[in-house]
Length: 76
Image 1 (tube, rainbow, N blue to C red):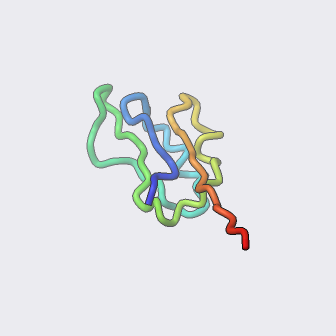
Image 2: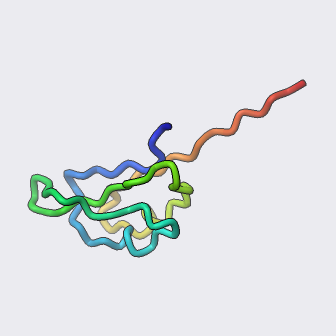
């Protein structure tokens, strides 16, 4: 499974806005610190992420990239 949401953990400042807006509750703050002393946000369950991009929309530091799976249509 490819990642649907990728965080730039080095730049995350632990504001937790992404955690609050995630409709599937798959984003949590890590239990470790990044180089700036913050607990970066991360997706703990990529499988249940719906790629809605709400997290990226509220991130004040634009550290979140959202990828949507490509659906391949089959022709007969």
